[in-house]
Image (cartoon, rainbow, N blue to C red; front, side, top):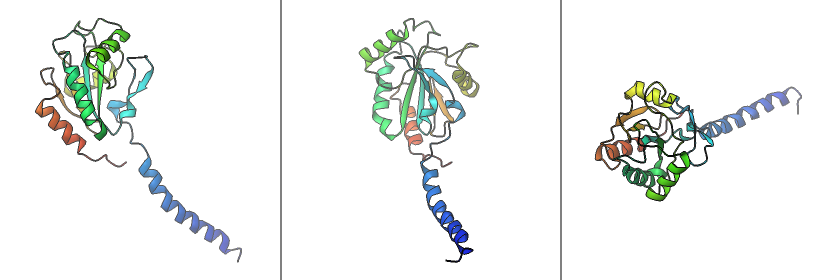
Length: 194
């Protein structure tokens, strides 16, 4: 073979192979982490730091929770939502808070209560502040977009793109038609390609 043609043929083959490999590798790349998920929190059960970026591309329902509140029974509905839709891409994230003086226990006590009383399997994080100047950076961002939680079990719904879709007061139960409809609409949205 002509020595002048070898480099040219090699370049052509690399170009052909690169063109066929690159799109497949690109399609498998995880979605970029949206700004609202660029936070880490200790997991409730063992306080190991968890990045919320692991939920990129999912529909996310964030809820500030409390064990001794008139709305505490919503844990059951939140777990039912999570169980019903998790395989389609929904994740419920619980953030226990004592901001309204109804979550006085330790992280382990809260974890035991949630699991033993309501069978909670959705991800829960260590007790944190969700209102005021001491609120976590995530909750400060949410407050800027939609207002802070006014009570326990306030809900923020994020679409697959990680952007805030809507927020719901404590009076909106997890089985509310408006909330379920909004979740289903977001689950029906395809994941945007980078």
